Image (cartoon, rainbow, N blue to C red; front, side, top):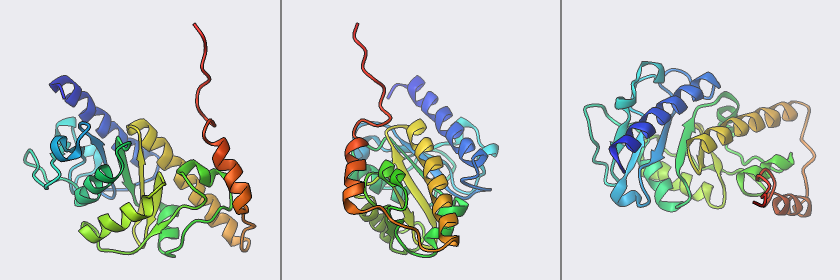
Length: 224
């Protein structure tokens, strides 16, 4: 990656981290975000937010380059969840950016350790008929990385038991949009459950939605 491209990515990553706080996905030093530096996560590594610093106190140069083996550049430590980010990039080649947040409603649901069922058709936005909750593992560990990758198979988002959420997207803008949508969906599910068990869409109904999502939200092609 050219130096000027890397500088632009650093600025975009910091802007995304600040946008996460503005959207109330994170508070203080909680959560983290990253962007893939190149096509090969083993060789190119990733750019990730630093550990222990709120986004509003950071500069673009504080974003940390991390290699797949854990080596990092610069004086600041990378986020404690760097291993999770590396594992997701290795498992999902189309992931260009990853956001991890302790968003209020997603975290509340994650503490119940249950998948989010098809209470609303927008569940399909994240790739399947449910959004899974990954099994519990201590933060910053290989066990948590493995659990997250398993829960993300065929999905763009998952809950982390007693922890929060993880979302991956094509790029930083896409990942941020998905994270905000996912937290909104978590709030809707939480509120629905206050009224009693929700009426769920059937497998057939969700299959139809998933088929329609193959073109839903994509810009129309124009000739000329």
